[in-house]
Image (cartoon, rainbow, N blue to C red; front, top):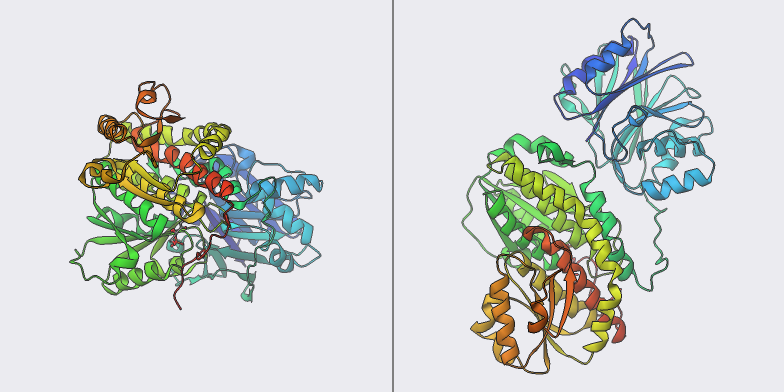
Length: 596
Ligand code: F6R
């Protein structure tokens, strides 16, 4: 996350900004910049690298003015180059802005602004906010900001000034930290509260537009009612298919600005404040319902094995009625795409009452979960319209791989391991594109097996949660009876159901449990059962054990779930199409399970 600072007052802004930027410079950043306004003149200086580079560039320059903005950039959208450093400006260099966070709909906005004839000078999402403000500006900056925030989606805090509406600074935030407070002879606005040394700062609330003048401020409350998102199906017949096709881009969104590859580290802006406390945590409880619970299960396996932390997953709808023994040094990770599931919120409340630290993973920034938790990670999956979760589930998996690295690197995970996982994780978006390009293979399989009524989805280890998720998708979207089973359990009972009318979808990538899965398939064949295998490219042997094979690209064993879930989502979709189901709104289901 980038850091922002603004000053308005009687003093010269530049030394105050530099002093405050120095106080924040222990955090990760790759470039910096300042803007000082005096009368109608704007002086802008930006550099790549350490703050000392900025100071060098400012040396011997006479920069005076009582209004200023400062920024330490940690690149998310756009490379580390000078023109991408903040402050950014509009076409006429009248509006200047510093931003922290990420604007999710930046691609759509960029296209729109270029079409309207705006001249964009950077590759960033942040600059787009300046041009939107420019569109709405009619002499009053806060009025333009008011309209602008209805057009942007994401987590953000920004501070803006205009030469055409001088003597004021306007600031607003949504789900990103922003504070302001008095300093000697002026007001300071910043993303980091620790820089307010003398007076306790005020925390800005989501949607509050604050107008600062030299010695006073006033707040305009604005409901953010984001509307510009493209919520039609576009070229797709159903939202579910559209959302599956968005998955490669979502992976890129989830990773963007959070991976420090050379250090093998992951940075979650939302966890920054708890970083030191999290180092001391010995136990994690991951909670969720339905698909979110399956993601939690995947997280549990990963965190145990790679972060060497005592993690366990719990079904929230069950856990809320239990009274388990809980260790004090425990953090609860609440996973909910909607952030509104009553059961998950109930567990969260109970855990908070017991004094546990709480972290939320959600797709809805303003959700109840986001408000209830001590810290949070945002899924960045965009609005999911189809009731059955697809892209949000994938985003949960990616987030949990990254969280494992976050906790792992705080503990014993070495650089080589984390770097290798991250390097491979980055490749998964293209691997998914490859799978989606072969969707007709899945469509054919759905046609071939459309008469079948009963299914097992088999998976082991990291792919056991995916077997559960695959079976849930078949149930909820295609209304087919499906059970997710871990491979080793087949012989403990379920195999009794196998006959020529029973289809097993076996997740068997070439991994550490492949041989075990192979022997399961041999048993199914003995019972005349039919098998679709999801296997790793290059595995010819599997063709002898399965009736059909869908190949996925080769990746690290722990990342295979990110790929194996895609054919399962597509298969349930195509079955549902053939069976004429209400795909986006399956019967008896709602998007957020809220108990009144
Ligand atoms: C399945 C699905 C549900 C949800 C569950 C929890 O496709 O979407 O199983 O995962 O209802 O919902 P959230 O994640 O909103 O708490």
